[in-house]
Structure formats: structure tokens, C-alpha cells
Image (cartoon, rainbow, N blue to C red; front, side, top):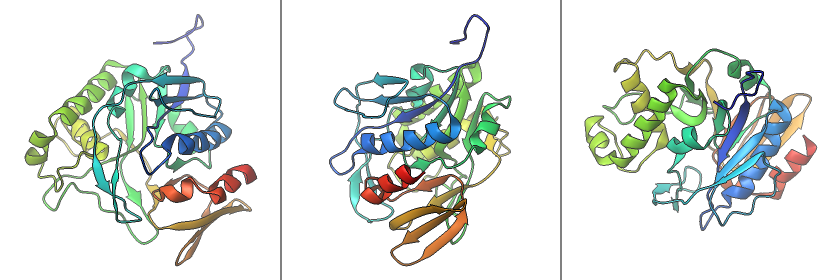
Length: 271
């Protein structure tokens, strides 16, 4: 572990970002990093490829060679897009911190709640469930499949159990076809959410009573967003059809075009 002479545990945030033909994920990571650093006051490191040109002043930039291609249906646009979601299992080896908060670049930090978790005693913690504004989101890997988790937010220390967990995720990814059949998964497309869930189930002795879940639900905005405003500790989220007002707290935003927009940049500047 990267502890100092005083045996102080190092803590920090890690982001993954690999650009595609349609989305500048590195730019989105830069914006995500501003919010995360402001509200959590933790150093932020970026894992990306050799072509990326990030603008945020990261604590460290770890460049790796990306391999593998995946396609998915964009939740908002319903179009098939490239999804560069491999290599997240390698975060255990690449993170420069003893205690790491791994978040997706579309997870917007607006409060300090994750600081309460990072001080707790754990090997790893995963986001167990998510809501949108209408109801609880789908949470199973198919009609006959087991529940899955959200790899959007993961906390881990560099312990033997965490190492085993991430090694399992890597093995599941490399043998995805086998696990699709074994767990009755409804899609052959690889998803980190599913792989992280399967690894967690295995490490918990194939029990669904996991002790490794973050003790609250994530709020996911799956609509097309026009604007988000912050007023009096409230978030006003304006979509193309509705407006929602919620207390200021962290959001998982699936609309990548909004995250690349001037409106989102203005929100960051206002914050």
C-alpha cells in the first residue's frame, strides 16, 4: 500500500475515459473531475490512452493501451454506439491510492455523502440499486437472471479480497459467453454492472445477501436533459418534456450529449 512514514492511508478518486467517434469522454471526465474535487476535496487521477489530451490538473494521468470493442444501444438516443467499457477491472493495479473511489464520468458529485463511506471499514463497496424519477430501474440480468449492481460507483482498498474481486471481474469479462449462459443473461453485450455483480455473488458464497453494497440508491437521470440549475441547495433538472426539483445530491446522468454541452459547462462554473 502507498502509505507514508506515518502510515497514513492515501485516498483519491479514479476516472476512466476513452474517447469514441461520437463522445468526447475525456472532456466529460475533466468536467466530472471539477465537481468531484470541489465537493470531496480528494485528488483525482485519470486512466486513459496515449491519444487523450485532458485539461483538468489531475493528480496523476495513467495511460494504458485500450483493447476491445463493444456496442450498445444508447438509453437516450436509442442509437447503436461504441462503448469503450473494458479495462475497469484493472483499476486495482493502476490506482495510485490505498483507498480508491472509482466513479463513472457521467456520475456528477454535488455533495459530501461519499466521504462518509470512504472512512468506513471495508474491502470494497458497490452501488446496489438505482432509481429514476418514475420508479425503481430494472435490476436483474434478464427475466430469469439474478440481480445486478451498478459499477458506476465503487470504493475499494488494496486488500487481498479486493484484488480477488477485480481479478474475478477480469476473468468474467474474458469468458463472457460462458457467464451469459450460466447466469441467464438477456444480452451478449458485455456490461461491467453484470460482471461486478457476478464477481460479488461468487465472493459472497453465491449468496444474494451481500454486505458489500452502498447503503442508498443512486438517482439516475435517463431522460434527454436540456438544462440543470442549482438554486438554494436544490437541483432543477429540465428535460425535453418535464422539470424535476430535487435536493442537491449526486446524479447519474445518462445523456452524454448534455455532459458535453455548454449548458453543463455553465452549471460547473456556477457551482
